[in-house]
Length: 236
Image 1 (spheres, rainbow, N blue to C red):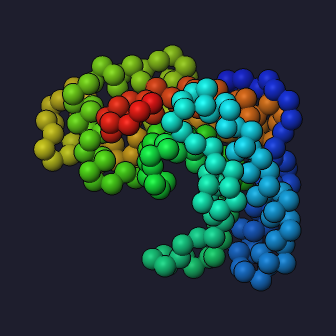
Image 2 (image 1 turned 30 degrees about the horizontal axis):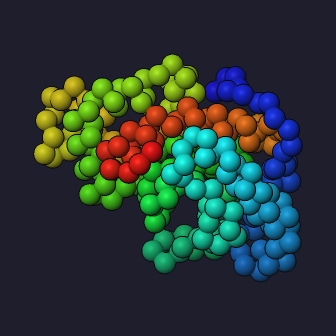
């Protein structure tokens, strides 16, 4: 994004030190180093993230009362820094980014409609939508596209959405089986993820007023989330 959606507001949560720690962790991704620098992680990454979540809660309620900003240190909106390496060839024990998800209050995991903030040196972004839905959920979303194509167009066709957000994710090479390949939304039916992304610079994340900017980006992405909730029979 070339310009800001909005950068008013006071106070900042994250700082340049947040990204310094993440860069250091990427170079020293082992348990011994992390334990020796646990206090820095708490001070520069974990605690700022939990404060951000807590402060975002009233703003999120203004977008929808059905999404949660949960500032618990475990089991809340902040994803664990520890990686699940059970099924991965990469046995690095720690993530080198911060993931914060504000999911629907009926959602039980990350693969549910919500809003998301990703902090990674050189790769920060805000997002809205659903990532890697299971087969049943994905089929319901696609059926929603077929049954209510105009609602989809309204959700992703607004001026603000097109200006600030980009649809991203994995796609099929052809329309999915069981759906008309000549349907007017055949290209949209290929999506396996339904995520709208707004890229952010590290500097913008650390500016005073970023909470307000993130709130506005979530509001821009809200029509997409609302469409997904409607397709999944969830209140918005």
